[in-house]
Image (tube, rainbow, N blue to C red):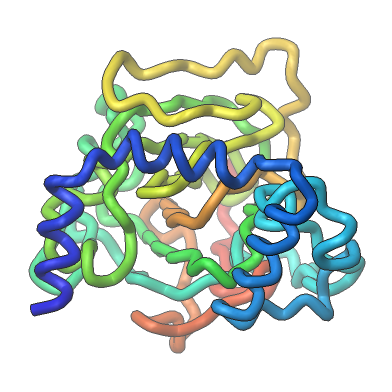
Length: 287
């Protein structure tokens, strides 16, 4: 009952307006306010500050700077095995497995399609028919930087405007096509193991998404898909390289073609992962 009420409230609340308010509050530089916000957040969500590179809260200019905090060197060792696909984030597995043709599992009783998710031409979607996917939810206490789960080259990046529903388990279970409705940044890669996609999914209170290629992207409810210009950018990435971050929490989705990887047996709904740990074994095929 509470879950349904939470979802119902999201339908009637001004989601983009609320997210804009959070965006500005998170960037207040007045020391008393930002220190209070950081300290209360740490206590409320039991954030592990022992692994944070900077001193908390003194060394952070704003709450948002703390939210996208860097960790100490070697806090997240990256599995160096050539065929190891590593987790791009700290978070919880929402779903992981194989697509059923072009259909992806969102939650029990809820599915969505590749075409709707990628919001682009059919050739992109066709590459992932019967492929593999994993969806990771980043809770408030998690480290919110996103890293490359493989080595490869970024070949396309597209921002898809959309809504800002929460992406927690309750909302995923009740809002049809949640990840296709919300705004998202879709990154397409070419790797030695074939094509791959990593998607930043926006959400309620996610003030922006940022990557080295796109800069900071503020939420847009509607409009055309924006193609990010990569012509003058460094597009090669190594496994574990920083891809970007959420300014407040959200979800990351990984897509790989059929036969490209075998997920770890314990990569199931509710499992926790840490950035850099192996979550699948990649096939040895090359593009």
